[in-house]
Length: 380
Image: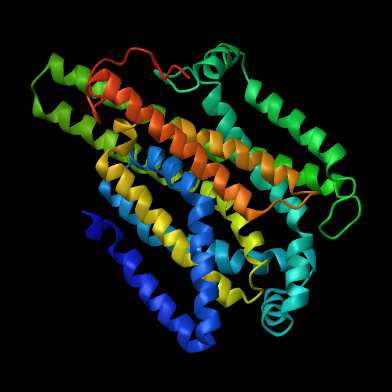
């Protein structure tokens, strides 16, 4: 199971480190290794969130996530994305931006860093919406009940998460973006525009995927009712065909949603990587290896049913997302160490895992949540 899931990650790690050693020597080998560890530590909570979505997909889309998805993650977000950002902010053509990244690495790094306020606002708002929608939703299991119970009651108000997100964006733009550390000057308009874009992206992609998921559930219910009403083969076959069609659409938009989530998580990793190297190829290789492990870990969590066995893991991951969203917004003006960012996520997920273990032992069914769906709290 472990080798089957992580086999490609192990293989790519070996190949990547060998390539780094051949092209850049021992120094390059060390830098690529550090970047890989950086990406894994910063994105561990991403794997948990992704697993919660990916388990709704079939085996085909899980494979797409590991193949096409990893190409987008490595080449799109870790290599192409910084170049595109430079091309847009510096008003350069794509070829000129690539030449700049290769021939004038210091200036390239400066341009990417100057674009950080917009990147942080977009990613921060997208991740903040994920956290808010989670915390305002009524759930069967509650980890921090003293927070989640009142938040679930407040969540009955329509569009509350959007209102709060817009207020946070407005406050961030009026306080943090007036004199930013990255590039200097007033970036209020830039932050507002990028933040609204992040919010719209979440609402559009998340809304479409949710719509098709709901339609799929409705068709499954209709199919069950038809099966109970008649044993005729034709109606059952038609119902199955419809469900498969809707599943394809739902899975496609969920895949897009997953990729946007991954993009939002990768922002801090890409920016943080410049503290280690400004070589885009070295950066893409190191972060790409880390991204591959996150992909494999996501599939591992799905196949092992870990989120069903340890019911507070998703809670911890979402709290980590909320913390990351706040950190991204803070970095519009202030520097925040990647060590702090990574440790916050690891600590929150570790605590939620420990709470899940305690809960399972108290219930007398370690790793088994197949019983009642009654509301359960951790007592925290």
